[in-house]
Image 1: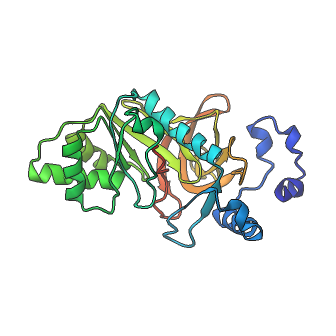
Image 2 (image 1 turned 45 degrees about the horizontal axis):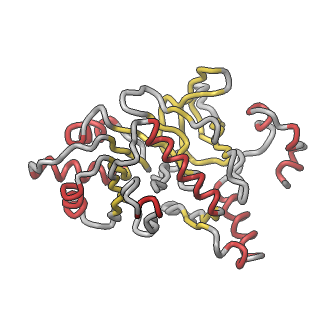
Length: 289
């Protein structure tokens, strides 16, 4: 509210992306300080919220709080990516998350719908591969580096595996060398490159064979600021999430550098995720249900 007031912007008059540009960009530090101050004033209110935090590998982590309705919305955003790429309710998923990220199975999963196995990435690579061989998943979801480690382990030891119907690389920029390693073990035409952030879940995705990332325009507004002098479509990414209301993300600087391409007026696609602007590997959202 303070930032809107300082910028002289009436929220009721915001009707499009162009109107947002009157607002300042919110840094992670600003967001962290605001969130921490609000929670300190009324800790009991937020004790029951879903909580998570970025790794903070180059500074203080950003702890964020979401209502459980917002958490469900974040999961639905990721499920959209899977379903758009051919996921089926009967598919068995192997998810390799951070050790503290896996929650209990849902009632759907207890009924055998959308079955899921969870192995934290803190396990040694050989244990991850052993679990993969045993489970024979239809869907594999992990950060890029852990997928590459598994692929190298399989290739170096000549292990026979059943290729997944889909596998999802998240959390880090998928470079060409890593992609070739993954293609050689898990397949070329079944790779999904997911782009997101822990704070808001999936933002965009590149399905098998796609050249660009498809943005979830009905849930997220993607802009670039501080454009490259040599290329107006390359710059720092800011995100506005349209459904998180408890601690809103409005022109929130993720710290990534993107190349956008306008294809339908003000609805761009992401041509490239170039990398973290500040060198932190925190680009992907670890939110598979």
